[in-house]
Image 1 (cartoon, rainbow, N blue to C red):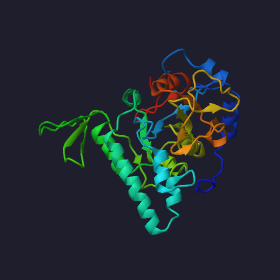
Image 2: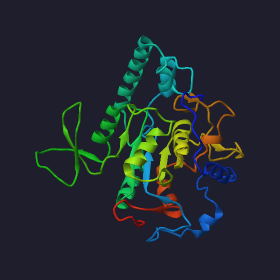
Image 3: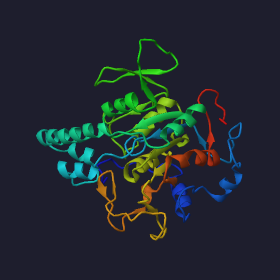
Length: 319
């Protein structure tokens, strides 16, 4: 495959999903009219409904999805000397010395990015919404495990411990840098798979592993990410529902006019370091998501209207 990932069979039903999406000429909620008509005006029903797909878990990307983008991926590609669309897969093919130099550059830039890490607006409220309904939350990132630990310990609904009292109602982490104990008021993402899990996205393996750990079918999982080439492709290959978080409006569906007033100019846009050339901003094939949103705040109403959310404890739809 072009990105160095072995070709995989198209998931069952994907051709129908793609056709369903590509016949829509607008962004956002793109389910068929029949599904929209069957959905209640608000909230969720008390039991799974055959008219709406079931979702039991949500898998999130981290950088640019749960956290505000602060990685200069284009500069990283340039400094490393990457010439393909997948920097991690490419450097795995290099000789040991060249790979070590590349990994040092990547480590340096990722460490610098930790200083400016901030949680994406509405990420915490979305997490709380899923937790209230006992919906699984997982994380799959191409970043390193240390960055995931930093995110959980310092940013994900956390507060520093000021005394030695133990509160069993919250999870406790230790900041590897300062040794300070951290109490998190929100449970961590679990599983949280980072770069040490191979193959990387856009291969579906990590998403399939998360679904297996939860004991749910991948078709009952949602993948949320800001990269069409990595997150959406991985989700589609795994058979998941997919949401592309397009905060800048840099993508459009095939057939959508480029004059959409809601879209930004597109100048200088990239997808995880791969420049989006003029005319290449159209989502096609495996890069076509089930939904496109501009903000995480759009996901809760989308899920409430179009999906049956089934919590892990009681096996009944949450609402």
